[in-house]
Length: 131
Image (tube, rainbow, N blue to C red; front, side):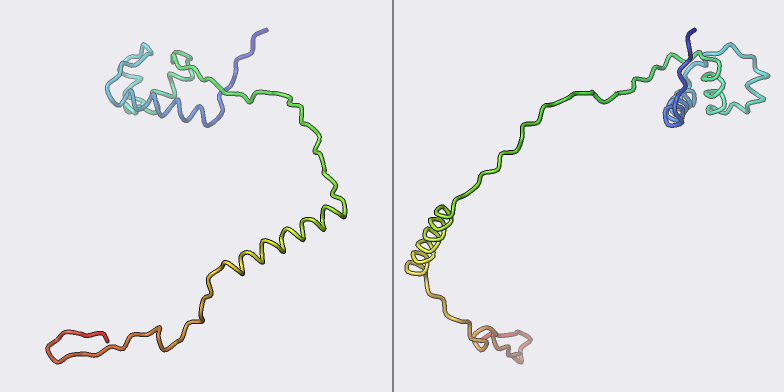
């Protein structure tokens, strides 16, 4: 027993839209119809596309990408345990680095708020001057 796969509503909408566009751009109708049937459909490309899809004459196929089922082996996480002596060594290394930074570093002065702002003067000739 062969079952016919049904299109999803999204696939159906995509097929009908594409075929209706083709018909509206003067593509030949794939059904043998008389002018009476076309006049009953009001020469509507979408209705003609629906009729073609329902009759099964459209040469359109749908490929549905399916996710690949793979099993990957995940290695166990290794937790490194540190000894108390290692922590002491880390602290001494950090202290040495801080000392070199403070010894070699540049001393910055605090900014004076009076130095931050420029004074503005308006000249009588329409120009502005900064001091």
